[in-house]
Image 1 (spheres, rainbow, N blue to C red):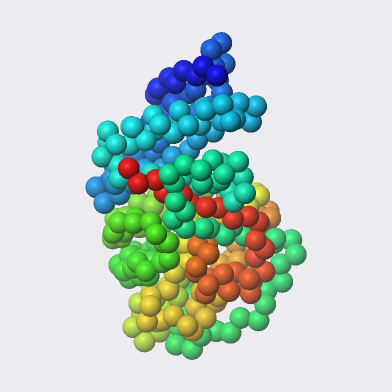
Image 2: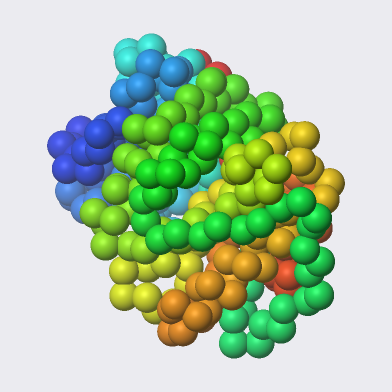
Length: 288
């Protein structure tokens, strides 16, 4: 099968990343596949790029995916990328395609959903010595410093074999992320656990509700500082976040979350709350 690859201009430009795009066509000019390579503009993440490849089902096994992969890998090398990441649902054609190339599984993600129409909150004990705080959108000024500091709770999150580089959080960044969500028209809800004796935030969980406040909301992250783990804070915070979401957005039908398969404590929390696994995804990595 004769294939031509055409570079495209991708309008999806973001403040800290940009995409390179290609369209694959057959000899008659019919589109048969596409590829998008997202490059990171931040120096700490410039060694990573994220790849999406799609081939029309009727055109698979004719070399289209291989040619798109070749041009994407070449572009990655030109931009000094060291590792290309790409996700594929376990057992899918994409999963098989990547497994037969030079990609290695860097980690496996478990995706789960909580059906709010049948949700019944389990008994959740209140950990002694802590209180909860919640807010929509940007963190309040009186909590912003300690909230930014609490983001270090993600520093040792399970990441499989992927080197994501150092994650730096500060006051400007936590405000910026909240503003980005707001500009998209979506609704960010944050629930935090505060140490009563120090007044410092020691854990947090985030949810993003769609702009129309319908359908499924998405968990963005849940973490607890190492010295405060093992006391049920994640379960407590998530249960409170679920209550808040149901109260503020009654038309939201479900909550979506994903967890690295080696993160046993978070899986246990999700199972206790009633989340049901929907599928698993392999995050592949290609070393250039």
